Image 1 (cartoon, helix red, strand yellow):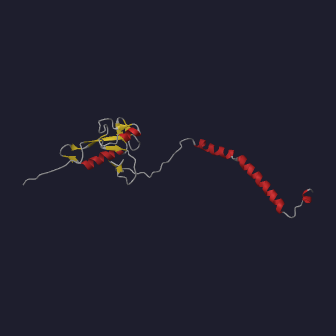
Image 2: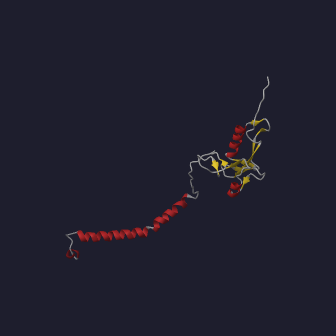
Image 3: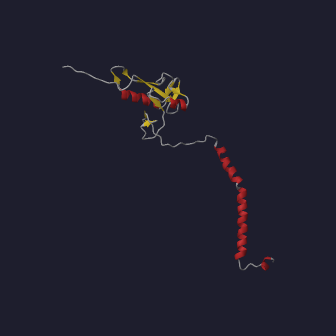
Length: 173
């Protein structure tokens, strides 16, 4: 009995990357890529590509992109310009939940979802944070005093107009 085994490789041996430092998703410490994405991509490549008879296990190259230049990009512009067909994986790329393409020609898979909320935190001293509010209240005191004086004047005027028992003769006593 003869058995023929045919297999096609799912991936290349070396999968190139294009990435920009964006903690906590992607970081760079001691000449190594760190953060959330690198281990997720390494495990995904190991699971999806499996082991090929021709070249063995595939791996993610975090050092070089598809043009054998540095995979690490410093600016957003250089990162976006290096998203191309020569490079296998680019990250982090921002998208939305149901997106499956990036720039109409590249595959896109959402890995980490966020609620889309950003919190702006002021790390200054709490004593300094109350002073602008206090200054605003003090600055509005002249308007408050002026309003109270007009309120009293209007009240006295209305009292004179509607009070039948007060006459001018009684007021001079």
